[in-house]
Image (cartoon, rainbow, N blue to C red; front, side, top):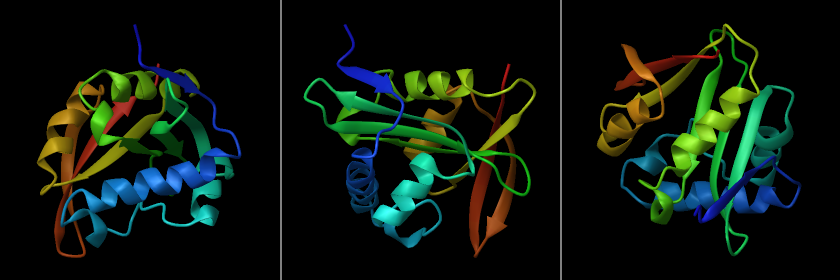
Length: 154
């Protein structure tokens, strides 16, 4: 039995998404040094959940109604990119995979979606292939190596 429910975002999720992102940033020394992808204001949360760049966004809530996960897939100048956050207490339970699957179901076929993972983020480097992405190449951004994983929509 799942301990979570996946659904489309609602306006009250904005503050909870900020909290989830800030919680993630507090988990490790490096997370707060990467400003790309941090959702630290209600305005950023609104754009992530409801903005025009969003191709597909899903959230997960616990049985108690707490926001515990989020996946957004967004338009960009190149390939669309995925933003994935799962609360630490709910990792390795299939939540990330379920969120990614639901988000990809809403995409048109033929898209190549990228997920960028810092070379220093060993947990995400191990998790990203389990979410259906495969390593494609590495890039340097601001002196840091980022691994670019890709997944194709069906």
